[in-house]
Length: 309
Image (tube, rainbow, N blue to C red):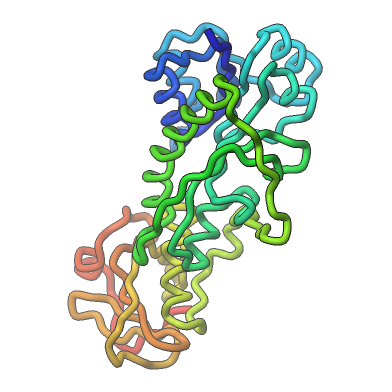
């Protein structure tokens, strides 16, 4: 039986763990982040992957504070893994990713070498890309540069958010993880070098870039809103209120006006951009939950001619 170590932390990785177990590739150990304070109550709780590992009765669960600790490296080597599977986890040092007999591979949320980095889904949606996908590759020391094992593409709908793509991608990724394990196990996983001339970055998204650029054209504003939904959430300022906007659509009519000006509020909320306008279909006021626009407008005062920045 192939000895697999699975490394991951968020729910995105759980889909892959689920599929491995369902395919009779039950990991001999799971590596995940330490229990942390989570949620509004800030209670100490385990990661999504740990919860899944406990549910499956996987007894060996490692939660290192640092993957560079010598003690962790020794623990990994003692497990005598054939394959290490990495999905949404930390950057591993060579001493760890070379500890498996047949190799260590990572699942990445893009068609490498495009969108290398921490936020490939966010960046693809923000760029207005109509296609993305997943890639499995053998780990090398330089992040996201290893030889490619498998790729699988998927479309991005013009109104899909990062959250929408994320939900579909984790299912696709789980399928590819299992296929990759089978290829490595069978000796047919011959890694193909990445074309460095086609590499593009996907750096982490910070809240400082979440403000909506109303001076941009409507398509850019729309992509900005959906690309940052649900996290960290694109925002704008109306009066003294910080409004978060999660879903929108490009208006194809003749709506126009000064960028950031509210054009319509008759059951819909349409705001002018540098070129064209967008309709906001889901948003959130301070201290409130996310709402569809019609419900939002029934309890929030905003009028035609108001300017948001």
